[in-house]
Length: 184
Ligand code: FNR
Image (cartoon, rainbow, N blue to C red; front, side, top):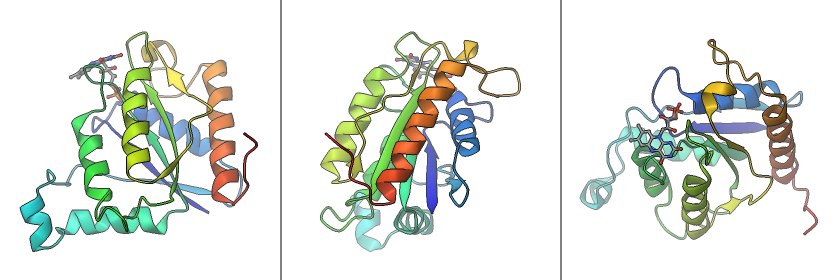
């Protein structure tokens, strides 16, 4: 099984990229997580799209199509989803009824230095994924507030409670991607 990890932060020392790395360590045998690089993605432009998806967009859509599931780690910028991540969702949501997001199992999580732990960004992200017809998990929630207290200087997750929540999220995503229907 292949999971595509997407972090909504480009910076090297990103807590959200560190969260993806921590998730990778919790995957069962036979499940791989590859991180997508959003650095080269252009801004969504319907004229550019009409002329044909640029190469980074083709690569984004292929990576999503090839993955059994997505795991998205979002920061929160000004109470919302960072532009770099929203832009990727916007490209990936096209064309509307046949996009690579359609029916794709997606789990979301996020780390912020604020006390809300990306709750508002995750709400927006969930809404965008639902509109894009992805199969996004609403639970379990992984909200990581005051991220500087949860990771050490090497970007290692050192908070046991967050690790346990992350393990539950990863387990749920793998089971859903494997075709298990979860009880309501
Ligand atoms: C932030 N940050 C932030 N944090 C938060 O909890 N709520 C918010 O609304 C915002 N807004 C915000 C806007 C902008 C433009 C920046 C750059 C930052 C702080 C943010 O949580 C912090 O920078 C994280 O470390 C970003 O995630 P990465 O890059 O560590 O993954």
